[in-house]
Image 1 (cartoon, rainbow, N blue to C red):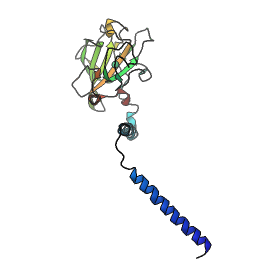
Image 2 (cartoon, rainbow, N blue to C red; image 1 turned 135 degrees about the vertical axis):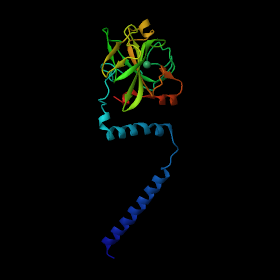
Image 3 (cartoon, rainbow, N blue to C red; image 1 turned 45 degrees about the vertical axis):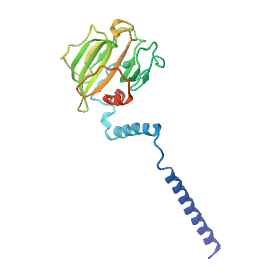
Image 4 (cartoon, protein in one colour; image 1 turned 180 degrees about the vertical axis):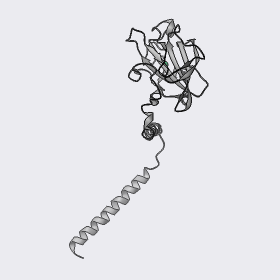
Amino acid sequence: MNKALVVIALGVVAFVGMAAFLSTRKQDNSNPTPTASSVASVAPVVREEQATTTPSAVPNTALAYPIGDFKNRITKKFFGTYVTPNNSPVQPEKFTGYHTGVDVEYTDIDTDVPVYAISDGTVLLARWASGYGGVIAIQHKINGQPVIAIYGHVNPEQLPKVGQKVVKGQKIGILGKGYSHETDGERKHLHFGLVKGVKFTLLGYVPNKSQLSAWIDPMTVF
Ligand SMILES: [Zn+2]
């Protein structure tokens, strides 16, 4: 065997040995104890896959925004934000729990801000309610599935009628005046929630994170 072949043979042996070592190390790490962060990282990956396999869903042209500049103005409370009177981004805060919708902020706008039906539907509820002031619940469908949209903190003097049919993009009301009876003392903003199914709830917060599964994150469907 000449010298060049010996060098090559030694190199191959070293390479195979290193590969075996790395593969052993990889196996050692292949079954780590599940952690909160590794579990949490699963959800966004699934959403990305859905977005690429159903491109028509992003943006969802079947839906209209419930209010102008919808996504840009969601700055304080997101879907699933956990608030208490001590940690809330909104002060003073009277609520505690996981936020079941998104808050769209309009404290900088003095003029009337219209609120729109996100799709065709039927008005299930339209009245003044504690914690909201004026609130509207409308039965819609998203991707063929029944969903009830909650439009909260609207002017209770300009509500649609219960049983009324609405169409996508139809103006259904205006935001209530901030820090007044119209919003039950809340700042000027739209609380927008999506409840799965046909049985509505007006809960704006739930005490356990697992209960959020009864709602849809609005940011995932527009
Ligand atoms: Zn809210």
